[in-house]
Image (cartoon, rainbow, N blue to C red; front, side, top):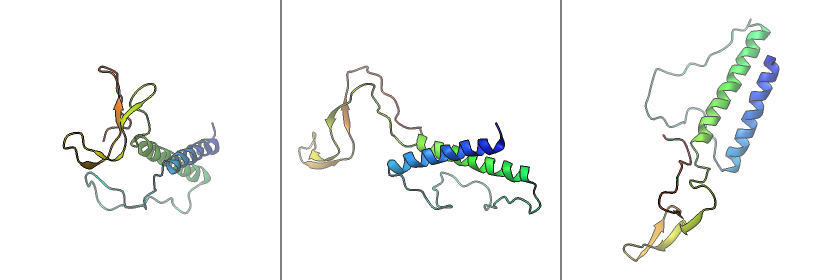
Length: 130
């Protein structure tokens, strides 16, 4: 595979993943606004190619940037719960929204979806663990 075709392959993956994220309503953040769990290292200093870099170095840099973008977007997509937690059809026991609270018998906001299954049915995570 040539470097150009490798770059095209990564660029194509970036477009597909961004399309999925757009359909899911995920908004892209501005650079530098990503929330962090911990602060590591010093200030960000962007890597720059030397002005006299040869074509091969420039191509390798573009491939590296595209690969990093695919990896970042893939991690983002993996953290979004888009799969069903149960195999097969899902029976909802309670939907999102205002409902009568089953414990205090007063209207309350239900912020989730209750899914009905048999005891012992396998349940899977719908996104990566944080």
